[in-house]
Length: 202
Image 1 (cartoon, rainbow, N blue to C red):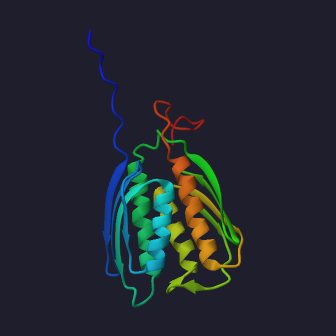
Image 2: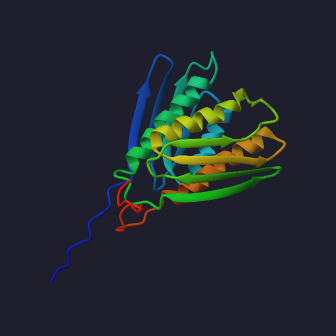
Image 3: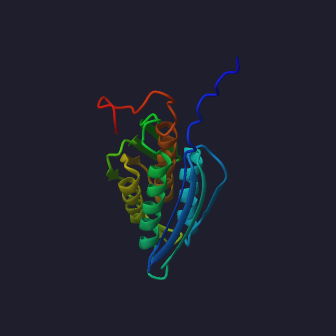
């Protein structure tokens, strides 16, 4: 007697775009891997997003254009919004992932921590000081703006802490890498077990 094949889980993918008078952002995201291709007006911001996606284990094609002649604020914020939308859509009904994770990343003089709940409860606590205000034309204050936009749309609670560091590049990169590692663990599948919540639903 032929066995009935087990039902396949839906692909954890999403494509989202957003176009305004200030920016044009598009994201094609796969939570379960693939190539990482990212292009933004800022080499440093591209570097940070590449670190985030690589450590999270995502496949991603992200293209961002914006009014960089003003500054990168609009581009960083809108990129967070669109990536957050893609993350939320790729999780479907939020019933098949591990939800909670944390990661601690040392990077030379810097040490950063990310604690994540991917559970439809948007909140950001960002506690990091940057001794140097910018690098490569990227103002480090924009890191907080990016993460706030991302968690608002993704439905994440994210506590980001730069524990210490002397070099702002290292501190910022450690924060992005820690978030990626926490996301890799929190978004990992827990098939057939339903949402990780005492309520039974997220």
